[in-house]
Length: 341
Ligand SMILES: NC(=O)C1=CN([C@@H]2O[C@H](COP(=O)(O)OP(=O)(O)OC[C@H]3O[C@@H](n4cnc5c(N)ncnc54)[C@H](O)[C@@H]3O)[C@@H](O)[C@H]2O)C=CC1
Ligand SMILES: O=C(CO)COP(=O)(O)O
Image (cartoon, rainbow, N blue to C red; front, top):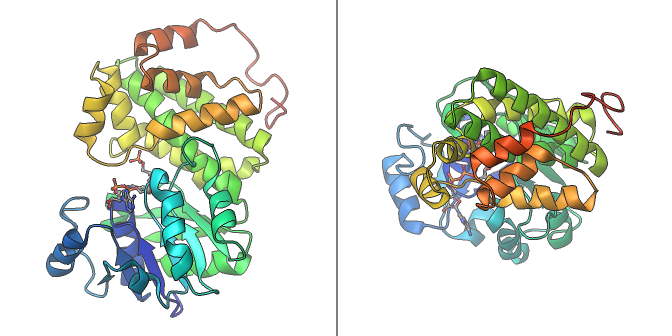
């Protein structure tokens, strides 16, 4: 059961709306801010997010706030849920508006485009000295908003804050675990979006169930190898934020990243596919950043790098598949389960 801490959720797309509704239903005083004032006014009046979660009635307690300063004023915790490409500018916008003891959390999945910096690094740089946490795990917004059973994890260096935030979200059909590996939790959530494109492409090409399982497992191997190189804990990657979200996103057709892959595998052009999906598809920018991190750490991640090449039109899905299947034969784990790989 939540205490009476107050929450400001920034970003009124599908996930921000679902999380704000969850907290409000949990009796946490919650404000939801979005950049589109007219859309927020309609949401307040209709108690529906007609664009992103049209079928779901939102709780009467939710407070919609189009003025960013008013949204964050007095909030104990600000939870940022904008796409990764807007994350840094969101931090810049709120920096002058926050009280000194406001905690910062985010449910965005991705990196800073163009640099590969983790979102926690951006928070540490732009809003130093505050308790910080990431909320992540296998959680389609629609299912959470419908109250279907889900489990996520909240990671923070500050155990008390992780616990406090998890309590705000924890509910009869929503389990919020806690942990202290922010980097590992962020890496899993970002990287699974890229790997979901790979399984989507394979399924779009009708390559079969064996191919899907092989890609998920070898994708998990890529996540572990990059994670270990960056200092993530393997158990974080084997948990909700890594394996859990990888399985969900690689197999569930609610995933926008998987749907992008499906479209590419069926021969649809990337711009058309992204337009049809009509929501944020994080892999389009995250694939470059995963490749950047792999290069920096001298790692060969063929599935992730193949997805990047397909997204850039450098190879076709057929050529990408051929490249994966023609790699040299080798041991599954050359140097043990958790590396060095
Ligand atoms: N939808 C889901 O099931 C889940 C999404 N996430 C993550 O949450 C983040 C947000 O995704 P969704 O809500 O699903 O996206 P969405 O496409 O449903 O909505 C995006 C929202 O961000 C807003 N936005 C875009 N640029 C902005 C900017 N510059 N400043 C302020 N707001 C801006 C849009 O107006 C829109 O309200 C992503 O990183 C995604 O990976 C994480 C878990 C589940
Ligand atoms: O992160 C998600 C579920 O945990 C949502 O995945 P998509 O962004 O691929 O829809």
